[in-house]
Figure (cartoon, rainbow, N blue to C red):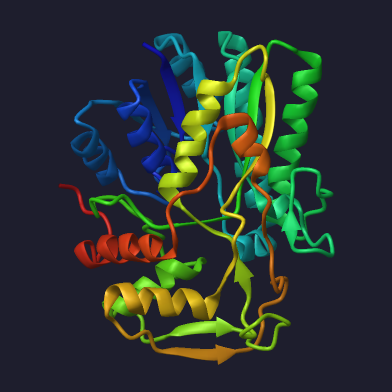
Length: 339
């Protein structure tokens, strides 16, 4: 049976990925420092998958800890989610982001090499593209991130490209996400940000549940159909299916993959509010405020290559994204608790 180390496996995308891995017959070990997640998710993963897993609380930057983990378990591969992801905070605390996202990745790669584990899925981001002057991003779009978070992702991507050149036995997939939303259909796991949400959908759902009085819509004067920003929202279950497909596809014939994971269809902020209201039956009060610095009017994925190489494409639409988000929020108004 194939054994996978999942760093950041109790986080939003990590937890959904672990369930799909377990359901696909993989054995999973999670490493997470719980800096932006809850240990309570582990029991829910086991409940939903009907399968046990090993959870290790610790930091990916800890050489000694990782060395011990790789000595204990015979891993075939790793999926690397662990890292900080708030764009605004990355601008305010760049050293924190370079330390967590870049140093942590290098420590992981060093210990993988030491243990003879050379298959890796890396959680990258559409922020590596920056603002190319057009709105549909393919894998050949120039890489020019405009914030610290995006730069940390690009540095790790470049590190892996150089590592592959130096050590051809590595099998690596760089998966560039657009805007993950939604939750597991059971409502048992979902996005549970600490503090004020950085992303649209958890903010909408917290307004819907009454945790916040209203949603701030940053700008309604963009050159878009309704004046609000357009983004490529992809259901987290579709997104993580791309990880399982990439893990199954990586091999000698496909030893280095760089793929966008998105729907190819953008929705505006107001469209997302409307869809949430339609599926939840809850009115979302909002206020139009000034644009945020660094926000682009519109961007979305060209994900044709993922379909060609992995046979993957997003299947779940906007109503399902909103319905699953609301089910999670409604049944977990305070987020995770230890069951």
